[in-house]
Length: 193
Image (cartoon, rainbow, N blue to C red; front, side, top):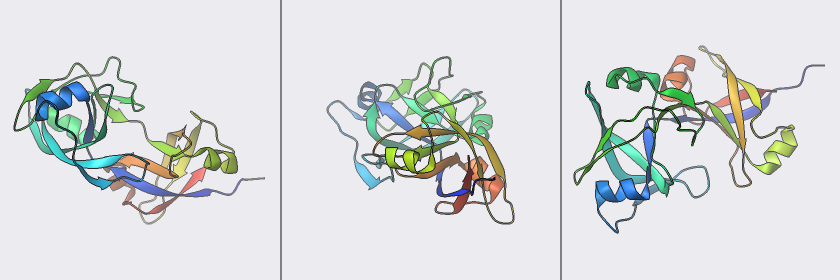
């Protein structure tokens, strides 16, 4: 018997970055702190007022939002269109898996940092709490399929499930993926296990 699809809300991740404390201070000043602008759906995460320019030998992309809090390593997340613009070839990776990834230069009004790696195309993923995982029979790292709805409906394969106690049940894709499927923040999709 076929299992019924599980409903989930999509969140579209525009290009953004997470900074290490060291890189943040190089870009914005010693003893400065990220300035929260608005909370994100995942607990403790926020969009900050701070932004940087992404710079390579080929091009620049200005006004890229910094997300908080700071992390152990700087991570820049973008779409394939952004990568083409900048002339780099990032790898599709889960957040935090940065080994062997390309770097670029980050520029703010107060400083500049050349990263040693950290640029990724984020693997499409689902955030699930422990309760969601139990309810839907999911395991951390499990690969599922998500089907969008509407006139440009698409099936996204290779969607990884990420489970943490405080995660909010959401499906994350980048702007290129969302545009191809004709979906926006808050649209509903079907998870097929």
